[in-house]
Image 1 (cartoon, rainbow, N blue to C red):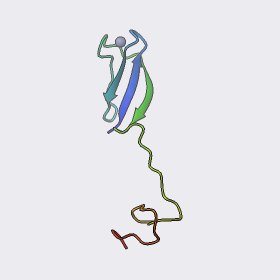
Image 2: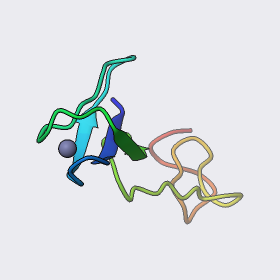
Image 3: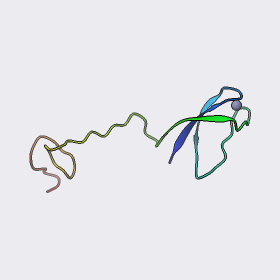
Image 4: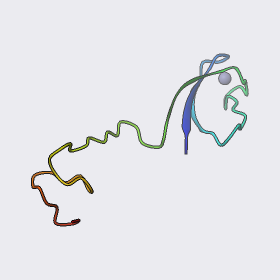
Length: 72
Ligand SMILES: [Zn+2]
């Protein structure tokens, strides 16, 4: 679910809004639609997914040994 962060150009309020499709977004404070979309996240901010690379299990990402005990 995309969460968009907006800043209202009318009153300066900043808020986050879940947006589905082409849903109209208005400021919760002044109901203005003069908004700047700042960025979007997908419910998880600051989440990084480092991949193990050549060493470790290619299926589950476990590192350290050439064989993973949880998956063959
Ligand atoms: Zn506003």
